[in-house]
Image 1: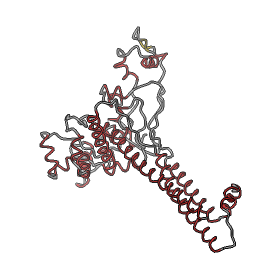
Image 2: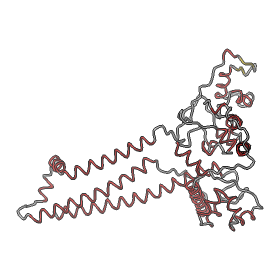
Image 3: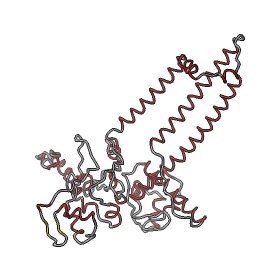
Length: 420
């Protein structure tokens, strides 16, 4: 029995060592995940004015964020630098003076976690650049991708189960030693037991242990319940959904390299509830003469019944392109693009992510009620010089004076108030 106890202790040490390495690997992988998320946010919001190792409109961020260690101040500066300047923060005033009073864009739509991820990415990439300079050129950088959520939860589950098993087996070993010590008539021939061990007999003994069976059932119930909860919680959440479209349209080329404004194609985002899918005539503004040899462009010609040789349209041959919708909201949810884009001045990337880097568009944000509410809680309303809020204030002033105010004055006859 003592040898069994010794073997078990060695097994416990091995398990603890494995668990320690798992925690270490998990922490390192999770840091990479934060850096990867930060890279996505950085490319979507910061690259127009900043580089990590070069001065552009703004400073080189690598040395700037390495020398500045007060992350709380950095988060406040990135989210709303104008508030720090107005409050007379000495660090903020120094930066403004260094860059001749150039105003930096505020990012109130980014959470503290988002900004922390960006800072993590900048510092990590700056360290990588410095290391590469020290080592000399060694080939292209390798993109670091963090673990999936399944891997993360799997690691956590393995760690918890390992600790529980160690505690249970340790207690069981102690109980067996006490039983043997109190019964001198029991003779244990360890070598014979090991040689003649029968798996079926061992299984029967385990099943007779009611406490152990109860413990296994409880663990299984908790595991299945957790899995069911996560599954139900993510039902109809389609983050990462990327259907194959009938035409291979690259946003990376048009919005990224060509710098075409989103609203050139999606004009409805500025003036209506829906952003609208652009008509093929918008495509023809350019592709009547650009890339006419492309097979993908010929799909547009076929849909319009257009003959590029004669440059004439045949309406009888026209047929609609069957685009696949990417972003879907439930019927019970009302969302108005113009209210967010025109009135609030929110950029498309705040919800749709870095579209200018996507070869094929995918759903970037979860679009859940919780996600929307969090954005509404941290986004400040800027009512100065905003015609929408000016009209509301004017209506309220009339009400205070006792003047007649109808529902139409408050937008009650707008189509979107009643029609989806």
